[in-house]
Image (cartoon, rainbow, N blue to C red; front, side):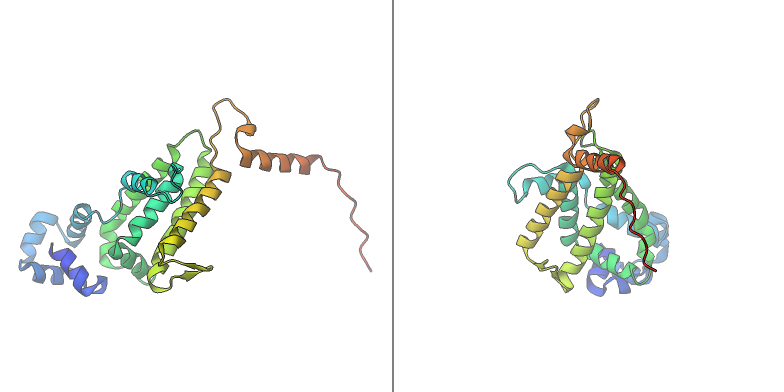
Length: 224
């Protein structure tokens, strides 16, 4: 497709309606007839080129590639799959980087798709058991934000906190970190059960309870 060829050759900076029409060798009338405008053209390209990853497919692929050799929590697999999809898609990385500086025209076309992708990610994470929805949202939000930053950084500035983000073993360690965090935050609570089913919540509850019942020590006198 001419849209993809122009982006690949000229980068997002050179992507515009006139450049795409020239590449395709057609006039604006044809564009308006089939796509409505440049936004419609970009949306059609994104739908056909799997510009954004499919959360369910990427989750399944991440579980199959799990470095631990065991089944991952769905939320971890979704976050890892998202990072792997970003690393495999240079165009979306370019778009995300450019958006930090300015909003290119193609952004408007892809906003709807990205909003839908975000909803699918949240639904995927929330459908993994009787887990507190706020915990799921918090984990998914922070995990995907972190994966976005690390995937964008990996190519140009791969050194981060002692890890080499351009090496697969570093991503395997990141995967293990997410597993450790998920084990603390996302243990399912059985319906009708109590806090004992969730070690992380139990520890937090116990700490809060101790704080409420502990005697309050008098403050030392202030020095003059």
